[in-house]
Length: 101
Image (cartoon, rainbow, N blue to C red):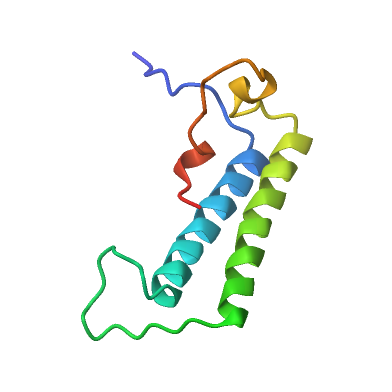
């Protein structure tokens, strides 16, 4: 008997989502390596460097993830934030695709 695999995702949508996830992983590593106040796991001798240039790199990665989200919208994918269009809704939807941003 065939197993239901759920909805079929177009290859370009899957590719865009994978790029967003990959960029988010890089973003999380850069934040970890740039924030002296980071409280997550890192080795005691881990090198941390904070700079304006790194802050800009964080911003640009966040922008890249955002633009890929706009690319998903242009591909007519359903909005991952259905409650965002209702200002009266108290619901705040979680970040799409499990991104940490």
